[in-house]
Amino acid sequence: MLRRTFAGVLAGAALALPLVAVSATPAAAAPEILATTLTYDDSQAGEFKTQVAAGVNVWNTSVTNVRIVKATPGQRVNIRVVATDGWPQANLGPVRPTGTATVWMGREAVNQGYNVVRIAAHEIGHTLGLPDIKPGPCSSLMSGSTGGVSCQNTNPNSSEAARVQRNYAGTAAVSTNAVLTDAA
Ligand SMILES: [Zn+2]
Image 1: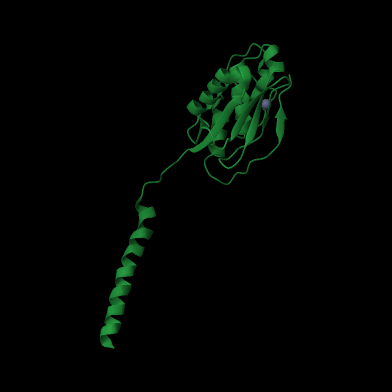
Image 2: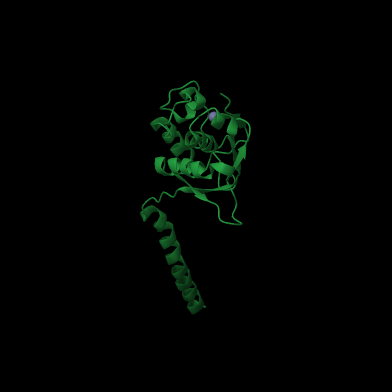
């Protein structure tokens, strides 16, 4: 009787050790910040593939909390890029790795002479949760066409980049399905 009780105490002590070790680990470990990775697909982007890649690169070099990479065959696509004859459009995000948003690269704006990389970066900005900020100066990416047809700035300003950083700082935000149209 005494022996069995003693053995039980030992077993309990042995079990308690790993539990203590596990609960101590998160407090001791340095906080790890992982970027959200989103995929994009340009198979329907027609003649705009190069400018779309440049627009993706704008965001990958402007923020750290989200990274956009080209989807591999069979992989879920988060940002689908489609060339169209209308005005550029995009779903308002922030899109999550479990969701899908579409960017429509509208030739109407391209034909009017707007910078195509700026169009791509602007529309991708919508999928990352940025609304239009119109009217606005050329220094603002989200000012869109109001930045002027001669505007060659393809980069977000500091507040636009900071807003995307915040959108991907946690996991609480939810995607919306609103479509924003960028008619001049
Ligand atoms: Zn817009």
